[in-house]
Image (cartoon, rainbow, N blue to C red; front, side, top):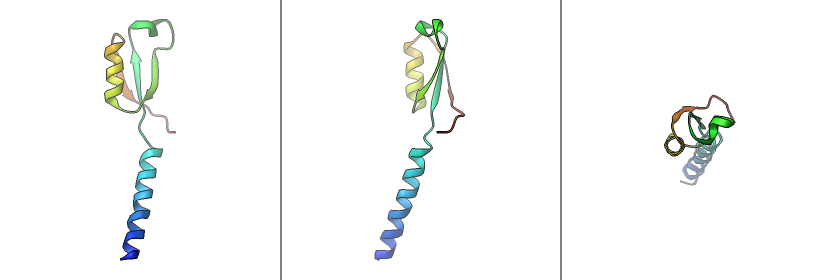
Length: 70
């Protein structure tokens, strides 16, 4: 019984640690708003939903998944 709990705990640490370390980053390429005068893309969003919300609030654009690894 103890052995099964240790294995389950170890697997939980491995899977939870891997998902946090390899979390997807999403980028927003803006076409309107204040970004027209400076850098037009930002790769700081942790979810596609957050990226799309930012696009809506800033005058349009599109979201894409970042190819960069952490």
